[in-house]
Length: 149
Image 1: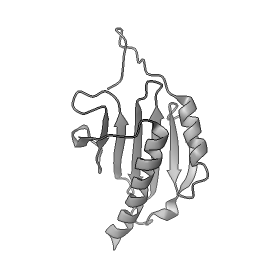
Image 2: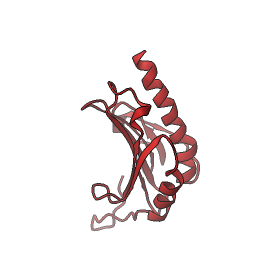
Image 3: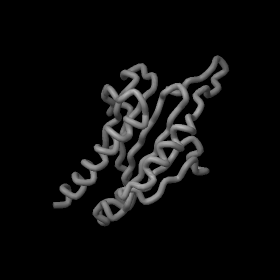
Image 4: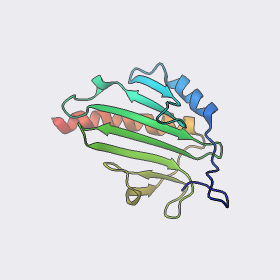
């Protein structure tokens, strides 16, 4: 749910400092191909392209993580695989929701609203990415290879 004022204007501000710090911390990881900080197509995000050689090329054309962080503590972390034209994704969220607790997860393969489950994440985004998201990505890479065996 996007926070708005009485006129319907978006009121969440991107936490650019946290996103820059996260990009800097992840820059040397060997599972990452490239990190785009505030690209034109996603000006409130960092977009992390994952190393293609970590995935079976016949199954996954590309994979990336998009991270948004806001000064009110909210965040969205989306993981996306392109299965040669079919998107496979999931999302870790922290924001107000009428259906879920503030911390929740939208499960793959489509990360739909109905696929949400309540979760509890570490207090800050950096720890959440490091302890929850990155370990999940490592497991996912192994699962993709296992699926083709």
